[in-house]
Length: 134
Image (tube, rainbow, N blue to C red; front, side, top):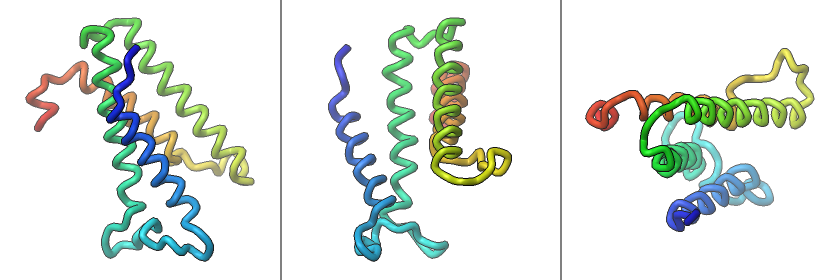
């Protein structure tokens, strides 16, 4: 299957931004890649929305394979992919932190991607284009 080069480039730039957010250099030298407290936006505050944009743009290419029709096989694929992403995110949270399982947050980044992508995929299939634009 042919890849969308512009989407792959945006994905790479966004991952690079995520790396800078998580590792801003010695002593936090790259301050633009820290999260703003509540008084504005910095570079770090745009990384997650870019990932969500990429998820949304990728939905189009994934749905094109099924001629934009929701059927049982497509529904299973959406749910399976979302559950897999959710479980991987949950396991990574459990391994990364030394917090007991019952205290692990369900609001990690991969967990949010799983929920948003599943919800968005079904919305795109169910709602008319005019409603989606609105």
